[in-house]
Amino acid sequence: MNVATRARLPVTEPADFGRRFAALIIDWALCLLISSFYADPRVVAWPPVVVLVFINALFIGPFGQTPGMALARLRCVSFADGGAIGIAKGLLRGVLLALLIPAIIMDADRRGLHDRAAGSIVVKVPKA
View 1 (tube, helix red, strand yellow):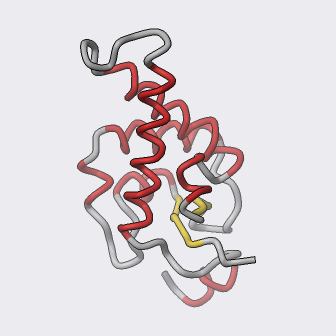
View 2 (cartoon, rainbow, N blue to C red; view 1 turned 180 degrees about the vertical axis):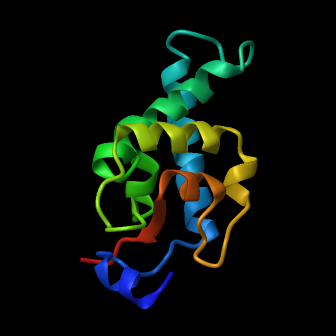
């Protein structure tokens, strides 16, 4: 990330892998809970994955955080301007996150392939 881009972002430090993983585990537990209302995740594996994709689209798109990211003090913002990425890009990011492999292939800015495809970056939220 160049200096000009960092200056435009509200928070400039990319999130570390540990926090991102913790947020994902929290979100995954939430997805298992939600999907258990209409399907048994032990029998049918895809319902929690669908919930994860939609949580990413509906929470990250307009608000920049999933519940897990909020607890881990992370925010997903546009790499270009630090704003919201929108529901369509949130959906794309969620689909690629569900594939897992794009999420673990990271660049120097700790952006996974899913972040690069959506034009996003996950950053730490400063303490208030």
